[in-house]
Length: 390
Image (cartoon, rainbow, N blue to C red; front, side, top):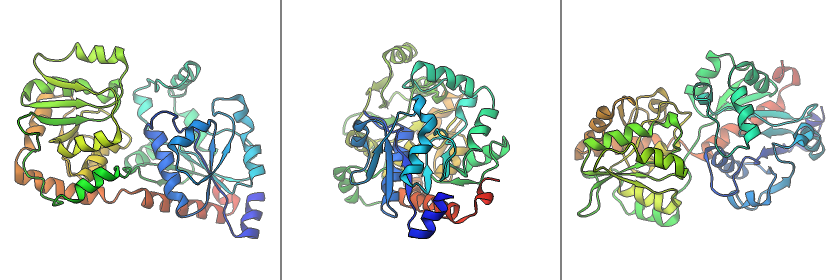
């Protein structure tokens, strides 16, 4: 193969990463995952990014080579492999399980983050209407996923929980490697503020002077996120304020407001800057989520890294990510949620939880994830074609 010849002749591996899923306005989970891996990977090995819109560069790391190609939704996607072959790619990494093209001369790594949409088939709202319709059809059965993943030489996922689900449903014959999600570094002013703290002593549940204790929810408002349980539980937490910090569609906000119990303290931020988010986390009593399903739970790691206790659904993925260093509750019980929040009010229990959680959060870094991905790339390029595509 041409990729094998290039690698052996030059000694350099030509790495291409598909950055076309980067948003142009504000990162979502997939967008941040791709951009963060690109930045960390570039510190280890030269990378070329694929984009389809110059505005994507605003949310991508600077100083990295890029190539503008077609949108992943364009019919020209079918011939993308020709462009990548001409570019001399040895290995191509996509942060999703979709990238077009046939008759490729390079190794291909695809990513499957989770299996949520098989259980909760509502597609992301930012996708074009025809793509949302195809999305629903795609997730009605597992066989399209198998066809997609088996086109690759290797598959990446973000957690051991999802890796086990991929094996359970026999979604691919390819090797599956876990390349974890990780928190992004906080803004410099937030980092400096936390550096001045004592580190492990969280003290009593943090609260502004004279104000209510604060809870933070970061995440979408899709039905499986189960924000309704948090709202119902606030009726049992009259001395708390709940901050819903993510962007929300007006219709969904009206729907949730109609379900608010009387006299609860809930703030809809409708989007928040990174600096404001870190400062809010820094003074919050807990980060909370009642999600019924999750692929990773990045806000949980961000909170643990910030020294903020986590109160979350009793899910396998949350036990994996937190290492058990959180307060868990039944996502179907608002009373259980309120009890879990009260459990982190004790100063000693809170300090112990924060110290253990910080140690667990330190395991998740983009540098570690990039090293694992680069190792996989090198193994694929060194292996015979028959070993990767059998």
